Image (tube, rainbow, N blue to C red; front, side, top):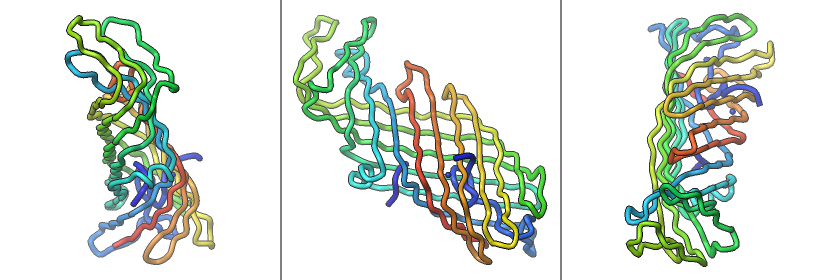
Length: 286
């Protein structure tokens, strides 16, 4: 179980990217094949904020603007399924990193901001008119990037990275409203009372950035950092994380703070989505 969907940059033991190889010299760990691998399960104690435009029935046309904000406790109490894992492969100065998180939660508290009939001004909905409104969210986020170690030494390492990130969102809002709005098409269709609306989107973005770790000499501790930024399906997406980690011979433990954001246009199904909060991770090498 996990929260949805680690401040400065990303997650040495993983956060939106992955943890750098934990070797006290700051150099990639040696292996007979020249390859090193690691995998990092993690738990993100996050808060999620998402603004969406969900589709009205075709007889009405238009959308319903919703706003949802849920903390870790709220997500945990409504979660159906969640998974969070990152992995990394490295050969000499080259690396390939991936990060995947998935959240499926139902009945999360939400509110309707406005009803937007096509070619008409938005109709604002007062929260006092909502008897109830709960949203079911399904959110997979996948990052894949290649990296190259630009600099490394006893102090740590600095990698440049480039790749892509995918955001998928499916939302279904069930509501009970103390009002009824007649649609503009003259066909008798109405919005209000008890009902539901839904919408989904798949958004691809290219990203570029950097990652690495700063070693605290003779202590076993290190400071992981990560940053990326990009665009494509989004007007802007970016991620930043940092924290503290401790390296052992076989695994790393880390505590980081991570912030991930997607910013869309007003006409998009997903207008804005951000996930933020502390994260704990364990990185296993082989």
